Image 1 (cartoon, helix red, strand yellow):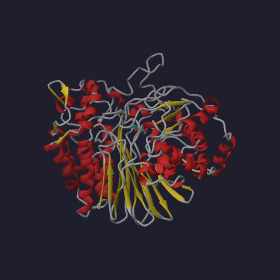
Image 2 (image 1 turned 60 degrees about the vertical axis):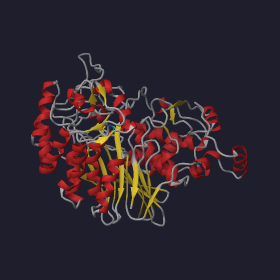
Image 3 (image 1 turned 90 degrees about the vertical axis):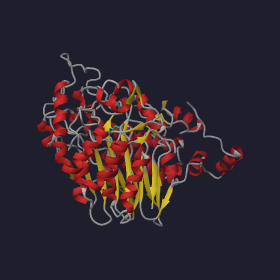
Image 4 (image 1 turned 180 degrees about the vertical axis):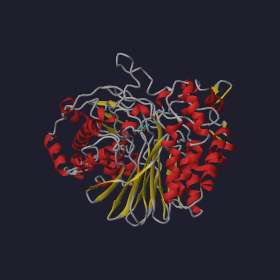
Length: 579
Ligand code: DON
C-alpha cells in the first residue's frame, strides 16, 4: 500500500518550498503534523496503556510514593483493568534508574517448569504439534509478575504492600465500565475465551462477551489480590494460588508443579548500557531485547541519519540493514544468560559494528538469505503492555510485562480470577519453526527446566549528559525492539517533537521474512519507489488502533527539565498524567 502523507494545508506549495530548502516533506510532516501535544508536567509523570491504571499511579505519586511504588500499584491495577495484557499470571522486565545511585534491571520473566524438555511440543516424528506451545496448559511458564512486583517494592519502594494493592482490589471488587476498546478486545478473542468456564463467568453475560458500557466486576480476582496484599509473594507461590494453578494444570495435561512455584526467583542485575551520539542507553540485557537494540544503534552510529532525513530512502535503507543483521544475531546467539554463553562482548563491540557496516552496500538491500536462513512471519495477536513513570525525586521506571499473546493461554485456574501466560512459545520449540512473531530462533534458546525464554521486551531509559532524557518501551512481539529503536532515532537523529517521536508511523524488519513491514503512511511514494529499486520488498502492516503495532508509552524530558508524557496515539485507551 502506497499511502502518501495525509492532507495538509496548501500542501503542494509547502512541499515545493521545503524541497528547495533541502528538507524531506515527510520529515517536516512528522515534526509538525497534528499529533496531540504531549502532557506537560514539572514534577512527575505516569504513562500507561489504560487510563484508570494511570490515575492509580499518579495518585500514589501525589501522596508521596516514589516511582517504584507507583510502578507496583500500576502493575497490579493493570492486571484488573487491562486483563488482556496487564497480569498476575505472566512476567516481564523493569528498568529502574534512581535519581542517585546505580540503575537496576529486574527480570521477572517466566521460567520453564522442571518437567519441561526440549521436545515438549513435538510429536513422535519430531514435528511441532500445532497450537501446543500457545494454547494448551503445557504452554504456561512459571509466572514471575507477583515475585517481580514484590521484589521491586521490597528493594526500592517506600509504601507497605497493602497500600499499593488497595486501588487494584477496589477496581476488581467494585468493577469498572468497559470502554469500546476493552469490549473490542474481548470480542476479538471471544471464541478462545469461551472455552474456559472461569473466564466465561467473568467476561461473558448470556453467552456473549461483555460489551461497551457493561460493568466488569472481578470478585475472585479481588480475593486473590487481597491474599497477595496480606501474604506477599508467599501467598502466591507457596499458598492456595499456586496450589490451584498446579491442580488445574495436572487435570488438563500441564506440567507445572508446586516445586516450580517454590523455586521461582526474580533476578536483579545491572542494565545493559550503550552509547549513541552523545546519549547513554540503559536497557534490558538478555533474555530481554536490549542487546539487539544496542547492536542496531552501534551499526547506525556510522551513518548521518539526521542528514539523510526522516524516512528518506537512505535512512530507511541503513536502519533496515541494521535491523536485519541484529535480528539474525539475536535469533542465533541470544538466550537466558543463566544457561548459555553469549558472545555479547563481540556482538556489542565497535569492531563488529564496523564489520557489518562494511557488508552493507550504500544503495542495495542485502538479501536476508545471504545473512542466514529462515522462514516466514505469521503474526498472532499481541498481549503485552508498557508503562513509564518519573517521580518528583527524579527516579524513573520503565516496565514491560506480558502474558505473551492476547489473554495468554486464555486459561484460568479455578478460584484465581486471572489468566495464565503462554510464554513457553518464546522458546525455540522446534528447529526452523517460527514462534508467534515469526522469529526463527536457535538451539541456544532451546527449552530447559528453570530456563527463561528469549524475549524481545526492551524497557529502556536514555540519559543525556547524565540527566534523564527518555523513559520508554513497547509491546508488539518481535517489533518491540525496533519500536524502541525508532523512538530513540526520532528524538536523537531527527529531532522530532515528543509526540511525533512516539506517534509517527514506523517500520520493521526482522531478518526473516525478507520484507519491510510498515505502518500506513510511513513512507512517501518516492521513498518506496527508490527502496524498491534498491531491492527491498514491502508488506503493509495493520492500521493504527489494531493493537498490532506496539504503543511506546513514554516520558521525554526536555533540556529545561519539563516532563513530556506521551500516550501513544495507537492506544487511545491509555493516558499520560502529570503533576
Ligand atoms: O517476550 C516477548 O518477546 C513476547 N512474549 C512479547 C509479546 C508481546 O509483546 C505481545 N504484544 N503486544
